[in-house]
Image (cartoon, rainbow, N blue to C red; front, side, top):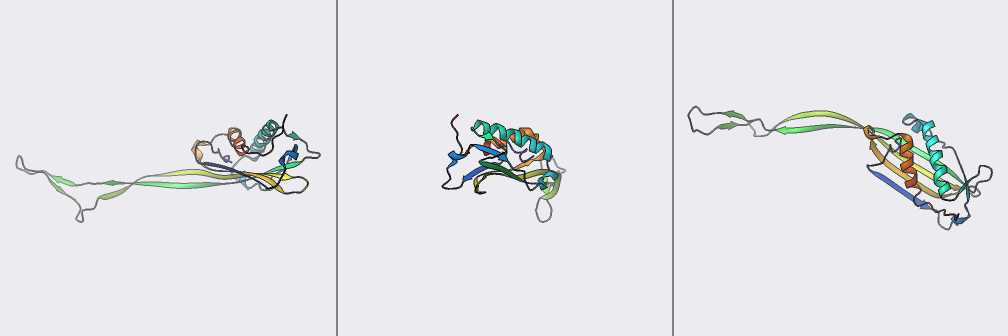
Amino acid sequence: MAFLFAACSSGPKMYSSENLNGVDFSKYKTYAFLPTKDTAYSKVVDRKKLVAALTEEGFRILSEKGMQYDTANPDVLFRYNLVMKKDYHVNRDQQVTYSPYIETANMPNQPKIYYFSSDNRPEVYNGNAQLESYRDGTMVIDMIDHKTNEVVWRSTAQARKEEASLMDIKTTVQIVIPNMFHKFPVKIKK
């Protein structure tokens, strides 16, 4: 995620979630994790660190929601997909400068004479070119009913972050995942 979001905090962010209509979320009490099938993001992010941070934060969040980890017979399965890319932006600010030629009269108390280019346009020159690199990312977390194999809940996070201001993966995950689970529909009374 910047990883994504390194990832993403301060800066453009978007979180959304949706539920499958007609689903009784109170029946879901146990969960397990599925591995992601897409690992193309590992060209941009250290996959081992990301999976470890996601797993740790997933355990914490789902435990707080009252769910129990059960790999033998889970009610739901969680799977994530992460799409990331590096993007570059070249900023070539142009500065407009008027460079009149000034001639001072030989006589005292005479006005100065200003000469501009023949068509009276300002002279333009390019300023410094700056290369900025960004990470664009989208993370999707699906909650899948283990019996029906249907996605019953989905949460999405999207962000674009300048690489110079990225945080480490663990910190990013600790910010992004709670926001993604903000509208999680499962509420188990403890």
